[in-house]
Length: 273
Image (tube, rainbow, N blue to C red):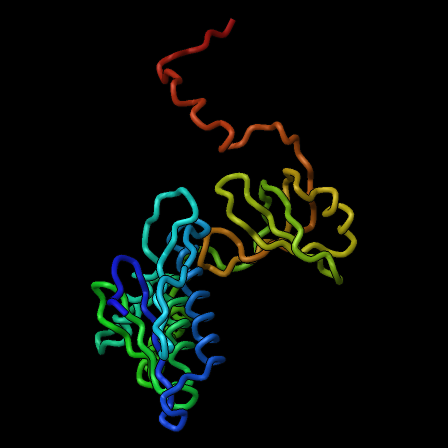
């Protein structure tokens, strides 16, 4: 198999001696699933809502080796290659140089490398992740221990640092469209798609408000309640909804205005008579 090029990612695991170097199919399938799951999460972080599928471009016969190739499936500008960034984070974490976790994408990549390295020497010998222009990353017990130290240090630092955003509970109101997730039980769950920006917020609705939730599904509404903030984002993790008020779906919002205000003359005045 040729070396990875472009935004390809090559993944290999090697079998144990007592298996005569053959690789347990269940182990390989599980690791590949976790790898692709991690890449998809990175894609969503770096490229709005994700823009790639990760296609099997090549398989090596008689070896647990797969070449993944990114395929763009949405016509948007790609900010970063998730495969290349994943390999870069792994290469940095595998060195002795201190690695600082900067964002949730780093957390996802590190957790994925920890998962891929788990079981090395027990269910498989070791593995390798490689990409173009990046040092190969050996998946073994040493990498697992290094990644765990990095994650532990990041958790300790986060617990001591002042939150970047508000942390706590606030009574808030948000404008958006409700989408149902799970209506069972005492606390039905929904998603609020914000009118400005399209971000999603998880919402929990008390059982007595289920009928109101049903009537609001797919419609623009003002959703009020106790917003739970974790300090890592301007938006809350969850809203414990206390009221839902439907609003005129033809009412303007920031998105619908678009460029309507672009040509206003700031020097123009309106007479009062």
